[in-house]
Image 1 (spheres, rainbow, N blue to C red):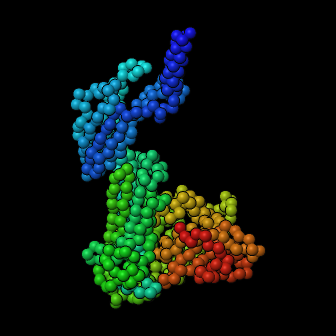
Image 2 (image 1 turned 180 degrees about the horizontal axis):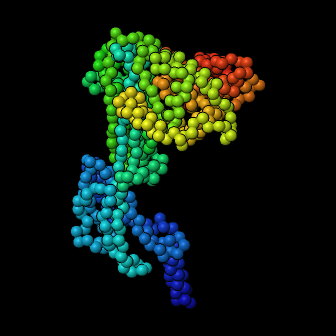
Image 3 (image 1 turned 180 degrees about the vertical axis):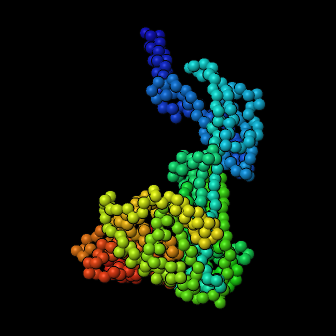
Length: 490
């Protein structure tokens, strides 16, 4: 009886072990994952380690085994031409085909191929052969430049004083790409800041290269897209500056540099792109708002040829001349839009005022001229200002009609086109019955002061007894009587 019990216990133990072994084959893939190969890559920037993982135990069959390569990313640029690669076998069941054990120097280029070939002695399927064409390594490039940088000052320089400031413009181009020519959809869709980080600095440097002022933009939505810098600096030193100037104090006279710098970090690699412009700080330059009035502002175009061409034609039709003051220019633009645009939610039946298909040659010639001006520093492109809306804006300009958002963006485009600092404001319009309606309007800087303009409401009420400039040039307090601000500008 004792032997029977003992044998029964042995049977149950053996049966339990058998069931356990079978269950192990059915556990999820990640539970049976193990590293069988270690790949180490040392290049000019850093050392990276990746692993080849043997995964066994498919959720459905329990018999599917395969290898997963941990990605190693290598920056392909003129400072990173070769890398030292070593491969270490971590599992006795893995046999490399190459007797050199893959310890070698590789050339970094668009088509990196380690050509790993090996065999693995699988417990279920015996000796299996595997071949990898890439070895888990991918190359990528970082591109960046600071284009169209411009600093607006008077001919005598900049005099830091109450009401005076300089304007710093700059278009930052940057992207990551794999294989050197195709935008990498994986990188462009990464949202984790630990993978991709960008920082943009606007610095004012003294003659010794130490900054008296710094504005930093970091980890924003523009990480993998172009970014347009548009910054006003009043001449005061920033907190914690490296030049040792007291924070909030106007900087002293002398020669300075305005610098736009971008630092981009991806997969442990960091590259910096920068551009500088000279800045003369002088006590003999115009003070206060007179300095702003005499500063040399340049036209800022969208970079979309059809839109810029139509904007040029509209400004001509409005009677704008280069000799006019900003006040005269903006009044012409406001009046032109009030008279010639219509507030329509559906403008499909509205006639076309510009037949773009028949204007292709003129638009092309105009783009050549603006490109030449941009290259010589006489104007610049913003590209990004409300770019996701450009299709609708183009249609609204062609038909001179749209809703508040369309009219606000077009008003901004026309003002920027003639060198006026203007932007779009948004929020709600306060109706007479107390209700709030989503709305968009504009701000513009005239003689150093910010005013607000609602051309869409003007369009809706034109010739209805309220006058032609009822919503023209309001102070912030005046604008707030009928507008609830939620987002001041784009």
